[in-house]
Image (tube, rainbow, N blue to C red; front, side, top):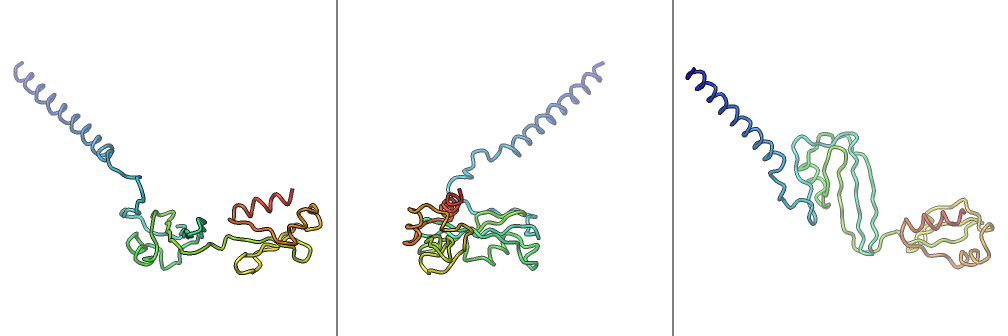
Length: 179
């Protein structure tokens, strides 16, 4: 009987420490870095093993202009980039700040001195509303909105030119003309 009690005590002790160790390991694995200051301020993309660029990875380039506007361009990687890890990608794009690196998306940002090209002037061209880049005067697009369909006040404004700043504002304004 004593022998059975001794074996039961040892077994219970082993079981107790096994359960205690499991809970401790779980806590450390999932809560050990809860006090870390991730997510505060500008964070560089961190290196993570086994994450590489693939054929469906979206490369996103964000240009931040000093006039407060930004532009984003997206593209898929060239075939020679397949398999690149964070370090290879950062080295190839050393003029950019990499803010995100994942197998589905890589984001680069860059500050640009000067005004963005998002300054437009809308005028009449061949009877339709046309959008020009304000600084260069180059035609950006012809719309399907006839100037004849606009109010007399709007027609006068288009003879002088309507200035619009920002791509979003341009889209809103053109949509308002269609209604």
